[in-house]
Image (tube, rainbow, N blue to C red; front, side, top):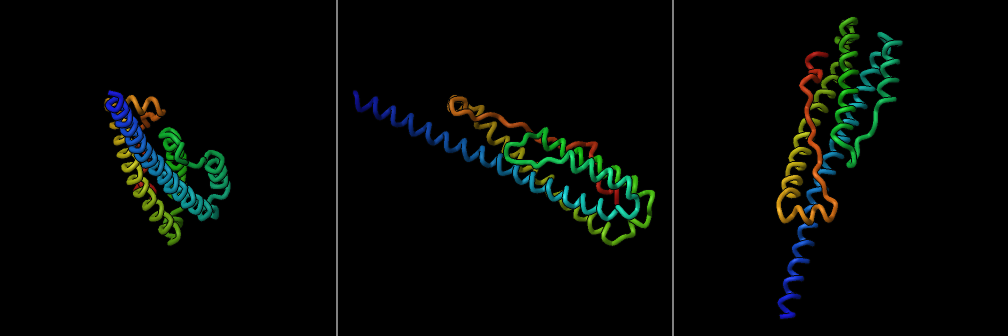
Length: 181
């Protein structure tokens, strides 16, 4: 009888360890996906700053004010960041691109500049990579959430502090790259 109880306890312990490991892997996948989004956003910000530097010669005062606004509102996205943090950074970029579009419309020679065209292409590339990163993040959040919600894994998840993560939403009002090209 004692051997049976020990065997059952050992099996339960092994199952808990196995479940914990699976949850750790799923959680790490979500963290890695958020880090990738941070890399893509950082690249977009750097490219945006290059575009703003290029445009200084056309509308210095307005561009310098925009540069300062972007620099002060920018924050780095890390594994611990939330979808709201990402949305805020996306909004900052979108607002800056809207402003750039207005300025570029006033100076047709900006759009004729080959460096402007290259930077705009780079921004579009980062936008596409960011969309892919959003999909990967949301997929990993779904996998983690599905696992956390299933009984009996949900008991282990609660005991070990695993929690559901929020999804990233792509804004329909986002400035399209075609609007500023």
